[in-house]
Image 1 (cartoon, helix red, strand yellow):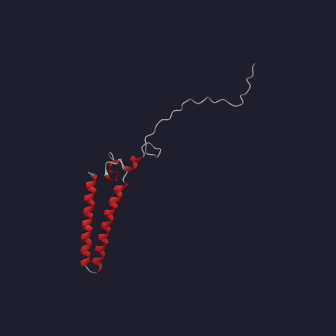
Image 2: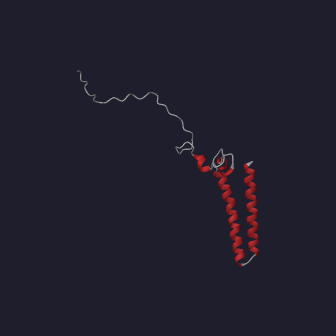
Image 3: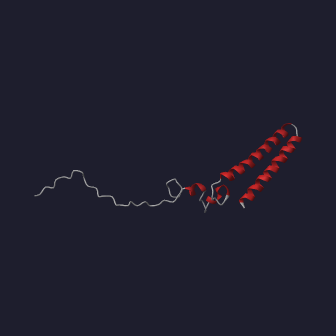
Length: 114
């Protein structure tokens, strides 16, 4: 259903870009220049829309990462790294297979007997 949305979005942008370029071809001077620039800009936006959808991470259920905004005051930057280590994945406890040996001094002091 997202594919239909992007196809419609790009189609509308392409039609608007075409109409801007067509009307700019009928105009003269500064109006023609502005029309050509706007028409090209709309075509660039259409291409960037396609690039954004292709580059979107797999498994994302909403376009442009909008699903990362949850709750009041919880923006996307705060949601990325709740666990604090920077990798974005939940932390897992790593328990050693054997407990560490108790620390003993290399040269114990001789015990004096009274």
